[in-house]
Length: 315
Length: 269
Image 1 (cartoon, rainbow over the protein chains, first blue to last red):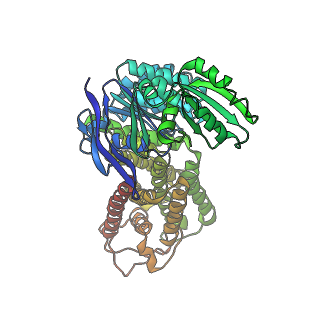
Image 2: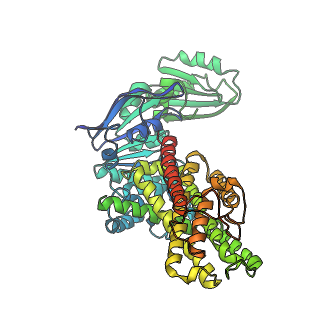
Image 3: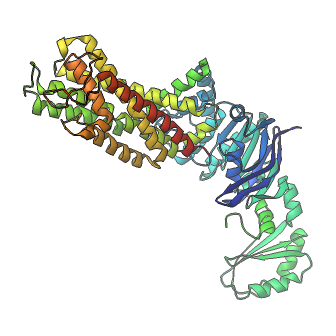
């Protein structure tokens, strides 16, 4: 399958600081790629350059073989962009917003009316005829996405599409993204929600400080960079944590131990439940009276990020 | 310009008018204030005699109309600053519409709103309050309408300049309001004011052209302006009426060109 997006040393510098640093990646047609990283990693800046609203300071990118600096208008005709913030006219109704932005893509109003109704139905906004300033946060977020879809873009850029949504609204958006992807559209998603990236993405690129630090399918990244099982321990006192760390290191199946600032410890180990019981039976943990909570979980992309950078995504 | 481009411009203009319609403050600033001043001045000066069978207020209405038209600065400044502030300008930049159509759509909506404002002021002044003008000639009144409209257009460029710098709608409103009020008062358009400084403000020229042609029946080619006093005495500086029109035209073109260039420089990354 051919690449519909290709970046070549894409770089952006703000006030002497390189916020996007020689990014090189490709996106295949019909693929859903997530750019995953903490706030300030350079995800949104990358999206701004790919969507032609921000001029790169170095390198370039091709969107459907069109150069982002030379063919801006042609690119804008085939992309849809949902910004991180809620950006529409709240003095207008949802229908009026959809039709207006559709017209901005050159689609006649008569064609837009039917499409707008279908979209509003899908996103649960069909019954709302009032001005969108009266909508709830979730409804506004859904309208923010729907505006993009009115022109059925070949490539859809979604910048933190579910930020601030309640779980129900989040699932509506996820279902919709699945549907768009099923229809063959290419989607670039930025998020710092690991769960979202895992369940939606074909492929994930992890960005930190403007650089790509890992790239692959969610499963491949987890397999490559993190043990499958993680024991999370939370203490109310940090005095014995170091001692515990030294003791647990003696167990050969414990691969890594990370101590966090919030007095919690992540113990990465292989071997599944059998080795979990070995840790419990070792007596090391029961020796520590300051233990507040303990949980066993499987690894996520958050752990991949943690392993690669030593930081949590939201730190 | 092809059919699609025209559709886009019309869609932007329609959207802007819908937003104005939904924003109640707009009515207060752009229609409420001029109406209030017109009625206030009418009740104070309505019966005072001027000369040639005219009353003082027959001359004053031009100032009221110019005052209303000068709110184009506020309206344009608010419209574009809000577009920046809420991020819709950036979102529009990701569509194929282009800035040229955004500006044309904005100018079209402001011009349409200006026509509505002018109609309200003319109906109030000439139909409701029954003010007099030269031989009650409808052609002169139409000319007056066009001059007021033209002056209103010339205020839009300044609004674009303000929107290039203003970060918020509140600051755009504040800056443009100060300019609009100051220019109308210092130019002597609203109340007679005799000072060389009046020549620095476009409302002076618009007011003079209106009064001389519509109320006094002067010719467009008249070789001199009259003083902005109630006797309309001859101004020895001798700027012809058509010269005053050229000054307005130059102001319109200069502010529009500068405004658009500044706005582009400040908002394109």
